[in-house]
Image 1 (cartoon, rainbow, N blue to C red):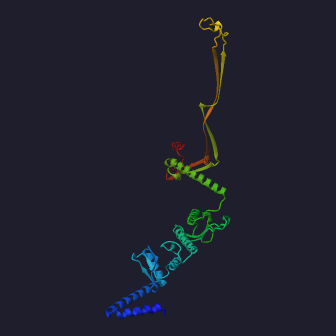
Image 2: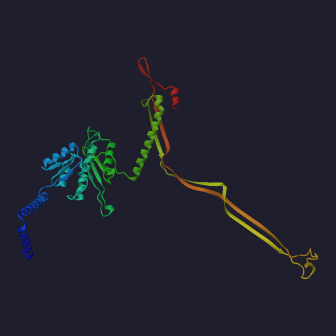
Amino acid sequence: MPSWLERLFEDIRNLWQKLPTSQKWLVGGVSAALLLLLVGVSMTTFVIPSSDYFMGDLSASQMSEATKFLDENNVTYDIGEDSSSIYVYGDADKLKYEYAAAKATKTLGGNRVLLGPNWSQTKEQFDELRLRALEEELAQTIEKGGNIEWARVHLTRRQRALFPSGDTKATASVSIKSKSGGDISRNEVEGIQWLVANSLPGLEPVNVKVIGDRNQPLEGFAETSESEQVANEQRKAEKALEEKKNAMIARILDPVVGGPQNYTSSVILELDYDKLEIEETFVDTESPLAVKVRTEESSEETNQTGGVPGTESNNPADRLGQNVGTGTESQSSEELSEKEYRPRLERKQSRVVAPGAILSQHVSVVINEREVYEDGEVKYEARTPEQLAKLE
């Protein structure tokens, strides 16, 4: 033992011996209390387990299912003061994963189970779990359709490569069965494709394949070329306009012939999809623009000579040389101006006539004859001229 430590113990022993009995009991009690407190904190931290948050915001039915799962797995838990949250003694993250995987018939995205990755799982594991949860949620949504008995959904994400040319597309497959065992309409199939495609980034409806319960492919969105897509859109526009024309015919005929059961109408349209570009130029002729102006000026100067110096003609006092040149200056000028005008160009604009104008339309209407009862028998008579005149 070091000498300094021996001296310290010796000083403490001497101090202890000098203390009266009452003070010895006081110091001993305080020291024992501090030692017990230290032991208790150590046991609480390292021996007695603490509870971790498991789930919250649970309804009564969800609480019952969660506690049943914990009881089956012999997990100790506590119910929160709000009666809607659960705290477990153990690895809460592992229990969340096991509970989510065990409830294959329930939505895995709720109850704060899949809010984000944690220390016990990698991001890849979390993304895979969330993808499986999304499959179950989509299947439940599809099953809520009136004609669908059950559905199964399988999703694959888009895989990015070093170069974009090596990327793989996101795909999905859906297996469904109708309640009645009959066929599923194309509109229902397209609706399922749109639902699944909009739930996963980068997934197109044409890459969602739907099959029936007999593993037969169902008709829906298919891979089409650009020209086929344009043709389909044009046909949809023609069909929509034809339906609009038929509705106009119905508004005219129904009050006259008594409803759609008494006539049949058909409208066939042909639309012009050629783009027409028109260039328009506006010219102002009333206030033309001067484009060329030429002006010329000319002048002439004449100096008249006087008489010989010293002669009488140069003596203004005697006024004898009035008709003789006195040296005055005469000047004449001429101005020539030419101007050329051109019409003023106000503005120049181009406009494009949108495609889709009606190129031709064929409308046919067939009206039945009137029913007339004579002697208990049904006979048919032609419409009166007055009724037909209203339709012209």
